[in-house]
Length: 288
Image 1 (spheres, rainbow, N blue to C red):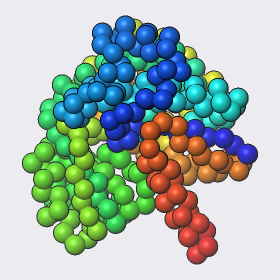
Image 2 (image 1 turned 30 degrees about the vertical axis):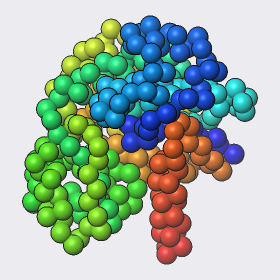
Image 3 (image 1 turned 180 degrees about the vertical axis):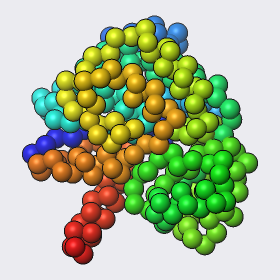
Image 4 (image 1 turned 45 degrees about the horizontal axis):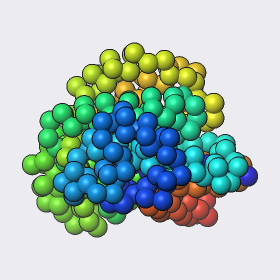
């Protein structure tokens, strides 16, 4: 059996996350408070709705809570996963779990990532449901060329990213071809060409760190394949302006012997996506 831990991104954030974890790791909470200059407990448990929709706060909160969730899972089970993957921000927790950086270094990096993404031009994102990714790309090229595919989440679920005005017109763009177009509560055009400047500045920032080669298999959002021996900073830089290839990442992991996925962190968003990917894989196998 191959144990695979997967870590969610910003979409799994909700008020109250981490409430049961903070008392278990008081030393790490104090360290996080020192780096942040504020209480991480207060941010997660008492912040206003407006604060929690700010990507700087959301990324920080999700990184800390996911990392503590991972440490708690290993403490409870006594087992380290054989492979890890994370969705967008979750990839940083996967790299923490794999020993690429320690808890505080990862937090420093995530804080800067959130700052740069927040400074990027205003934009939006929306999930397009019930239509394949290739067809989504065709329609965007023909009818909404300022928009990019940002997340390839599951068969029939593709997230699109770009300027807010273009996102607002997506229902009209896709018409009856899409079952639904669901705007996401984000303030930027994440994982698109509109993040290119933020990615470039982030790459310069990362140059000051020496990031270790992962000790366990980590699947990259950019390539949907394991990190190699090259500097992880290159893939993390590209990730900001590149699509999250989640479906392909899961398909790669499904080829491992007896894969068992465990979502570590708030919610069950990734568990649901993995179930959809498995269902399509089984259907294609049966039809072959």
